[in-house]
Each structure stands twice: as C-alpha cells, then as structure tokens.
Figure 1 (cartoon, rainbow over the protein chains, first blue to last red):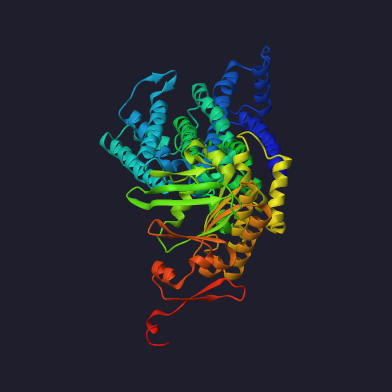
Figure 2 (figure 1 turned 90 degrees about the vertical axis):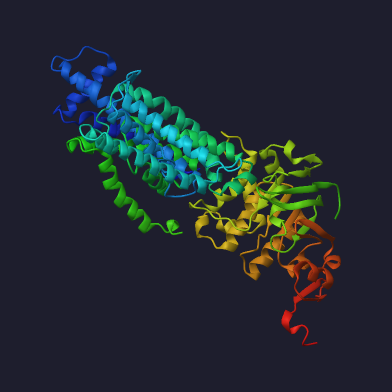
Length: 340
Length: 268
C-alpha cells in the first residue's frame, strides 16, 4: 500500500476542484468571482437566472471559461500520462511525448494548414486542429515503421529515428513558412508556442474520448510499465509479450499526445516534468504514478493557463517552459539517481 | 541427481540475423540438477541461455520444456517455469527492494489483479531465503552490485519457477560475493530442488560448486560430465588454448592453474 500515493490522490482531487473554481471565476472580463460562481450554479441547476445576471455573463462562463478550463485539464492529463509512458518505454528520464515526433508532426500539420490555407471543417473542428492531429500521428507512425528491425523495435533506434524524422518534419515546417511567408506567419508562431485561447466545446469534445479512454487503457498496463523499466530482455523473462505491449503503449501515448497537440499546439515541458514531480512524491510504481501524474498535469496546466490569461494572453507554452525549466534544473541538481 | 528431462535442447540451431551461433546443440537438463555451462568467449553460452528461455527462437531443432516444444507455451507460461538471472541489472528509478522482488510475481498476476497477501508471503519468503530482508525498504538504486545481484536472484525466486537459468551471475562481483552467490545457488538446489543451469567463466569455482559441467566451443557442445571428467589438461588446453596445470583441492575437487605461456618451455 502506498500511503503517500493515497494522500496525493486525495490532495489532487481537492486541488482539481479548487483550480476549477479559481479558474472559472477569474478572467479578463472583470466579472466578480462570486458572480461567476452564481452563473455556474445557474448553468448547473438549470434554474432561471437571477435578474442581475446578464446573458453576456452566461456566455462568458459557458462558452469561454468552461471549455477552456476543461480543455486545459484534459490536455494537461494527456501530456502528463503520455510523458510517464514515454519515460518508462525508453527507460530514459529525458523522454517526453515529443521524442517520437508527435510535436514536430503536429507542428507540420498545423503549419501546412495555416500557410497553405487548408479550408475545411471536420465536424466543427478546424482544418488546423485536424491537420495537426493527422500530422502528429503520421510522423509517429513513420518513426515506428522506420525503427522496425526484424520483428523488434529497439528503443535506441526508435529514439534516434524520432529525432531524425522530427528534425525533417521541423525543416519541412520551416520551409513552408519561408516559401509561403508573410501574412499568416504570426499565427503559426503563436500555434507553435502553445495556447488554449482558441478553446471551444468542439475541441473539448474531440479530446475527451482520447483522454478518458487513453488514460484508462494505459492504466491497465501499469505493471507492464514497471517491468519494462528492467529492459526488454528481463521483461520478456517475466512473461511480458514485449513487442505487443510496446506497440500498444506507443499507440496509446501517441494518441494522447497527438490529441493534446491538435487542440492546444506545442505546450512544452508538461510531458517531461510532471512525471518527475509526481515520481518524487509517490515513487516509481506506475499504478500510482499514472493517475497522480494525470491529475497533477490537469491541475498544473490549468494553473499555468490561469497565469497566461491574467498575464494578458501570453502563450501558455512560454509559461510552462519558463517555470518548468528552472524546476527541472533544480531536480537534476538535487536528485542523485539522474547522474548516470 | 537424475530424473526426467525438464528442459532439453535437441539439435538446436539458432543465432542472430546474419550470424548463426549454435550449430546443433544437444543438452538435456534433468529435474533438480545443477549444471554449469562453460566455454570460451563467443562460444554461444549466452545464446544457449536465451534460446532455452525462449527469447531467441530456434531456426532448426528445438527446445523442449517438459517434453513439449517451447513454442507451444505462451510467454507467461514459460515465465512461470523458467526464471532467468542476467549478468547485471540496473534500474532507472528508485523502486524499493520489496517492489523489485514483487516484480517476480508478474507472470502469476492478471492485468487488473493487485498483489495478494499470498504474493507478499512469497516475496517475504524469497527474501528470507536469500538473507535480504533487512534491505526491504531500501531503494534499489542505492544498492551495491553484489546486493542487487542477490536481489535479482531473490526476484527470480519470487517467480516460483522450478527452473532457474543464470547468465554469468557473478561476472561483476568480487570473490567474496561470487562465493556467496554460488553458495546460495547450492542451497536453492539442495533445499528447494531448484533446477539450475548457470553460465560461468571460473573453472575452479565451477569445479567446487557444480556436479555437472557442459562445455561449449564454437557453438557446439564438446563435453558434458562431472568436473572430474571434464577438467583434464588436454581438454582445457584444447578448448581455451591456454597452458594449464590440473591438480586436486584438499576437498578432492579438480583445480586448474593457468601456467604462463612463455615460461612454459623454459622452466620445468
């Protein structure tokens, strides 16, 4: 039994609720927190709105703050869980979802959609979101296929292939940016920095099945992830069908990360750092690490987005990297186990 | 020390993509036997262990577990019968010793099944057998190589397999820890009836601790018998290509001393 894990789950559930209230009641519109709460109550209970609550207030809470808040939580959870999986998969504390080309692929898709003026909607999702999702998955699939070696997928090969293909995808993005330049360039740059300010219910509806189903399925592989940390060969000897397990985990974590990237752009450091923060508290057992990392990701990303909103719509990727970087350096400095 | 064959290689041919390593090996391991697998570097010892454990499929011939081809078992079934101790283990994150040992229960547990009281008892008993109970709550990342190797054996004990294969388990250990590990293997064999096949490089430790020695050279089994039968000057010189002297220890076991080659002709 993991006492610290149990405490952390409870603490995180409380924190999730606190962040939910805090985030839904703070924004740039100048609505008071008390009023925002009353609007939420009105929405939740379905009652007649009080006379001082205007239609505009309801619109702000229902169509702007709530979807953004939920999107932040889902994106944070997806990135954190994908990061946990990647670090066990690669047996490498530096691993993050971006390592297998998810971010670079998503960026290529989004850049192409913006610069080449793709103009379509797929079930209320913009061409940018759809293209980013497809790009992220396509590049990841390519990385996997290029890494197959006689029925096996050695992690070293996968890692380096991810770097190479990721670099090529980034180069392609840059080329598109230069060749079709001007006008739309700032939109691409903004997307690359990651942001939740285009949040809407369609995006929430797109990501939540991936988040819920993906995280639940990954959780079923908690013990397998522990054993994978012993290396492929020993995992084999402990009865794991290693190649099959790895393909499942790679697919699930790619879907999680791709869904997150598609709706929010490239938000750095969450997938890398949340697993480390969480591991510090609950230890390395994935059956505790996965749920606590997911919740921590949800809470911290929402907090970061709150900062982004109150700071006048700074892209959230800037905030996560600005705060995540120093914290990660502190961890590296403090913990002996990373000195290999 | 003989009984029915529990694990058997029959005319086993296998290897890696471009390179065939084993060229038809026949080896039969009986229940509760304790066998040392010896041979020069590159003779195929580790490859044989991997093939016997089912990680490396046979390209020709076969491996039989209780008389049935290894391929007819699932990975999990094999893992409930054969545990493998590697040369060295390393872990990236600081699992506790108990968590590490508990990983041995993996092939017995379903995907959604938590460890039961029985699993914890098995782990506790394994730690008792290997004298590692005092390490229980320590992070594995802080242990010495010797302690970690002992715990890997403990983990393999918790796996509750009748067969244990070890690939040079003492390769990175000092002489004291080597002795401790071999002593432990003898106890497991004598007291628990564990069938043990252990790759070794040390001729004298092998002679002292094992009853049967199988010698591999260039992917073929070239000798198989008691240490007394195997350790002759002619055979060891032929296989290892080094000049040796063989005499007996006070306990009557063969003892191999390497004679320095250049001086051989000059001094009597």
